[in-house]
Length: 232
Image 1 (tube, rainbow, N blue to C red):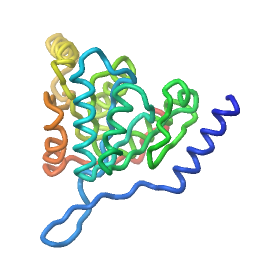
Image 2: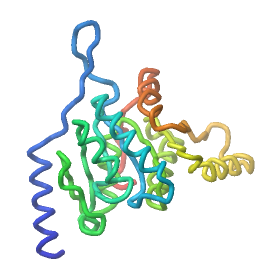
Image 3: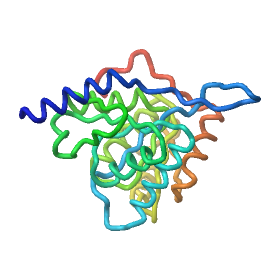
Image 4: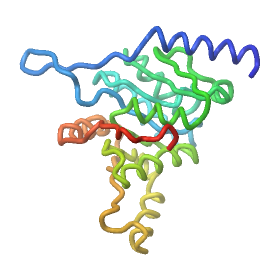
């Protein structure tokens, strides 16, 4: 690790210790209660993609999260849709936790303006912390990394390891090939009754936060199994 990277890692760890995540609240009958949806983990590309609608969706989602008092949990980078989502949350007064492995801190240009920045030793720790700190998951358009993160959460949900809501943000039909693949797996009996893959498909970024609030109100859990391994 270079001296400059070591300095960034040290600063990030100090920042994370000084600014723990705040818990959003909401008003109910004149009194303040804990919001059932406190944080959303957003998986998305470190590139912008070709379609301008992807950037627009990232910005719309970030703004909506900030206005609703929902913390963003994400991969910590400043590039592409990752950076667009995080900056939109911050620009609208919201809170952001960036979680990034040390080896990616320069490659993905970690966003140092976030109010909580956690530098991990590897990808496994990054994904575990993203899971533990999130009440729900949203997948915006992205590449292999986004797909891998999404599929991991779908698998753990399928196996009964969590029942946190998962949303595919199907902006301009981006995720249609993926949902078609799942349908193919189901038709060939690789996804069988009792092992359903549970997620919602939302076409418009403006509908994501309301849909997640509904899911949480309907009883989705943020419980983390006691036997959850340190590495998925």
